[in-house]
Image (tube, rainbow, N blue to C red; front, side, top):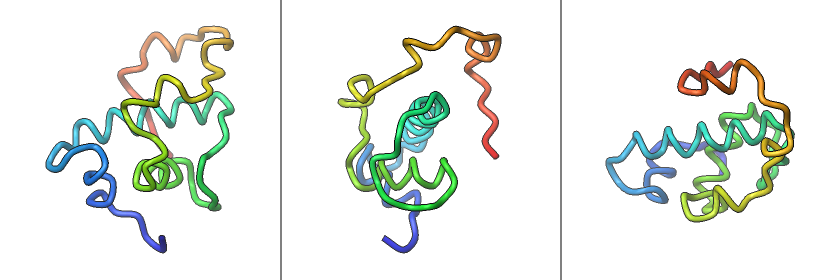
Length: 89
C-alpha cells in the first residue's frame, strides 16, 4: 500500500463514521507510545503506521483490547488523567 487514506480505514471501521476511526486510532497510538510494536512493516510516523494497521485489518474494535498492551504495567502519569486530549506530532 503506497498511500493510506481515511477511506481505506473507514471501510474497516464503518463507512461515514470518522469518529469511530479517530477513537480507534487514538487508542492504538497510545499503545504504541507505551512501547507496543507495529503490526505492519514501514518507516512512517506512528499515526500513519497506525492507520496502516487499521486499513490492513490488523487493528479493529474487536481486538484492540486483546492486543499486547504494556500500558497496564506502566505507572500512571499526569497525562493519563487527561487522555481526552492527545497531541499528535
